[in-house]
Image (cartoon, rainbow, N blue to C red; front, top):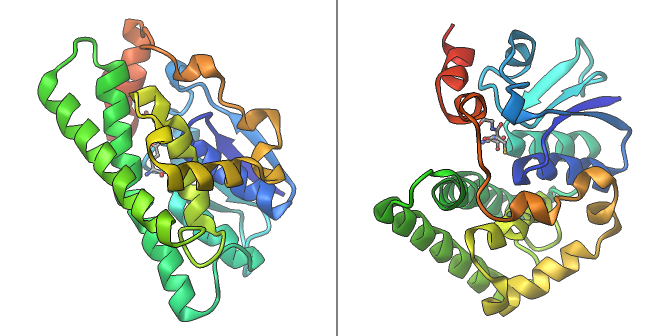
Length: 236
Ligand SMILES: N[C@@H](CCC(=O)N[C@@H](CS)C(=O)NCC(=O)O)C(=O)O
């Protein structure tokens, strides 16, 4: 049994979609980040970075004590290697999949994440970061569009690279980006959206409300996500 420490965000959905694709048993604990449920010593023992998602494999590959895995990209690679699926074995094809996974982890995720912050969470609109991160978010969509114009999936077949990118594309409307302007992304998005594993499970559903408008955080919630409480959880 695998424990999934989960949050209903694009990074959380990478792990839950992967587990659904593999069809392995798992139980999930959903965290409320606004309440700071991820800022505890117990959770820090699983992830020194105090962020979600995390999995704990109670029967890890190679045996031994339960293995916590943090960083969504590392979770995808771990599960793909353990179950021998969704990451090609052939060196060339594997490299292509890992290149796009790293592109997501270092580019699409962080840059769209910053765009989400400045579009949705920043109390006052500030032109410079808004323009900087939205330009970068759009630039990355063009990169994706080119790749998906020449290939059905990011690697030579459906893989963890697609699983990593898809939830971020689903969330793009929250930063006022419309994938209708990107026909190859739209074709790829719909193909993945139609997969049973991707659709399965209420936990996969990110409500429209969670992507709409600007969340209003009270002082405690802001501190848990962006301020003193967040810092204290890794400093002390
Ligand atoms: N690079 C990390 C990012 C994880 C991350 O930032 N997770 C967010 C939720 S999507 C989080 O835990 N936020 C809590 C916080 O900001 O305090 C990964 O891919 O796992």
